[in-house]
Amino acid sequence: MRQSVGFLAVFLYLKIACLNLVASSDRLKLSWPTPNQAFVNGLGYHAFLQKTGPGKDFSSGAFGCVRNNGNKFHEGIDLSPLKSSSSGKAEDHVYAAMDGIVKYVNLNASSSAYGKYIVIEHEKFSPTLYTLYGHLEAVSFGLKSGSAVKVAQQIGLMGNTASYKIPLNRSHLHFELGIRLSDQFSNWYNRQMFKTKNDHGNFNGYNLAGIDPLLFYSSFQKDRFNHPAEYLESLPVILKILVPYQRVPDLLRRNPSLSSTYSNNGNYKGWECWIGPYGIPLKFEASTTVPSNNSLRIIEYNEKHDGNNCRKLIVKKNGRLQPSELLKTYLEIIFVE
Image 1 (cartoon, rainbow, N blue to C red):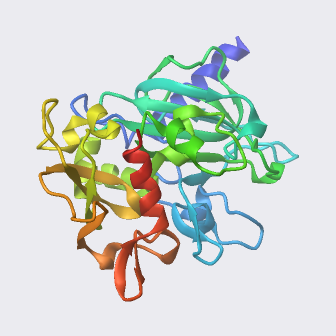
Image 2: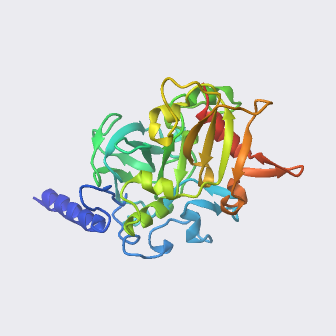
Image 3: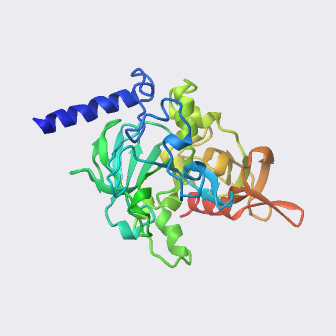
């Protein structure tokens, strides 16, 4: 009987936490991934983010260029627990942000900086979104690749697992939201000179281009979009760049809504890529021309919105604008064969 009461209490608590974020059936249903209601209730970072250390600001747990004095990028958000044991061990459950299909579960904590982690594909949207849940203590029993999950379904337990040491009293959920760049990621990875092998296939963090979860949730809460595609369309275009490539990139083949000029029978010479904040791909348009030297060509650049130095997409060298190493890496992954 005590177990039944406990389950009901968790369920009711979660429903309350999601109340302001789950709307009618004709729009996205969205849940906060932990039981903490602080963000939903409009409280500041201190109430829901885990900072990186005792002397650090709570903003170090946010998304963006928030670490090492703005020189290091953080791809997701770190969410602190509501409940912890006397030793500092987190006791919060973790919940699926949206309906979806579990695509990857890593149970070998030492094999990834994410520790034990889950990746869920939200396939009903175009482009398809992915959420990642990292540093888990445990994955819910029976949850595996291919499992269907519903919004607000319990999927794991918050923890501090990682390939490096996270102090017990800094247990947290690392949460990411973004787009998977390629189904051919392993081909790209194997050509690099990395010292570690890729144990996670297409669900390696390199292959996920993130958007800021807090801005996404905040915009939804303010009724600024009904479906994720509308949110992506609202993001500023940082640059347009022409990539010589005669095939259809895997990302576009999986997400044809990203282009108005894509067809299976097209004769392509290149693709004009529209890139949003921090490198998120927003749109692809077919091109019948390519630069004479068959190299990348910057068509437009919005320097005002190009973010901080830690994540610049365009850099200036010898007085000329050139793609940054980050942008070149993203484009290599998107157009890998």
